[in-house]
Length: 434
Image 1 (spheres, rainbow, N blue to C red):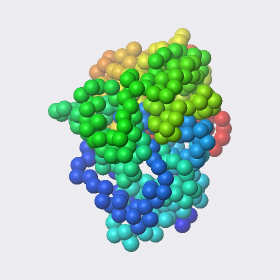
Image 2: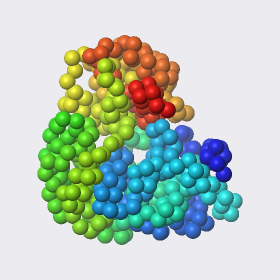
Image 3: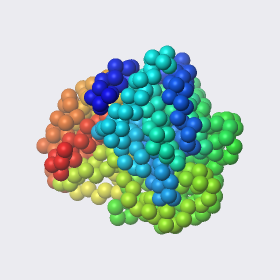
Image 4: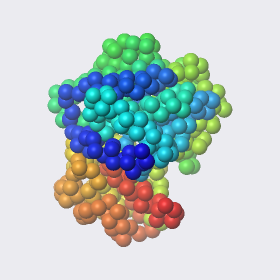
């Protein structure tokens, strides 16, 4: 099976990422059956399993780099991808090759009938990743949850370390005690032998996670944390504390004060996995070359263009705070925003600072779950913003460029689907590379 055939096979299965809103009646039975027929590859290596409303992708990348710097061979599984499907499966920081991806998906296609189940798009990719990690004999897999946790396809793994970054408003109708309900679903990744690294600091929610009975638990701001977080040229300078060590003046070459908390979670997770503190050399090597594509990433200048995958209220607030703290503007901000169903456009736009923006250009993300651009523009109008709806992401970016002066800043955000398409377009335009 070549990659074209593999993609065709994958696309013939239901894609819950594209159709899911609030999901009920889920089960891991199909995923367990699929993995069993593949030989239970996920039992061949230990796993650091991550969930959280925000920050789990950034934290997964940081954990990967820390464990690599400590000398381990690391497989990483994340979702969704920004530009290419290959990004979701990585080995020692490098995306899977086209041939290996085709082989990994093909291995699942070969046993589907034997397994007697019809897996979803995400289940196929998850099974393919777990099989590939076994084939290349990783020392550890860093696995990011797709949705919530308890019934996510990735949750057939037994986490040696279970990481929860936080609990916020996403994939919820906010009825009743929704924070408790979300926490309960995310807590499902904690197994009896897991070492829990808990980034959520709310005492009532902490009890939800501890009730799962982890073998050991470290809680942010008690057992580990970011104790100082300062703006530095090109990133942040942070002090990080874990149960085993204190690291001062650690440079993170990324934007956003919230990345300090993500780094603290990652440090604690790596220490929990290794059973020993990380040396200064390991921390410096891991974070010194850190990149977080699509996470407040500057992709062009004159005008400055920033892309950020803020897709929920907490993410929007973090993006606005980063913009205010880290960028001195002589011009104004032009927002390019596209959103998916399940978000309140008025709330997200207000948190992004749309009231004070020079202009808001809305677009329709390339997803069946997209909110049409005119609806998002109408939400911006309610906030008193000057807004214009442009159907496609690329046309919206071109329109923002036409509106912006060289002193302005264009922030492209609202969905990873928007950011992914924008990143490919902007980097191609900027570098001329394919």
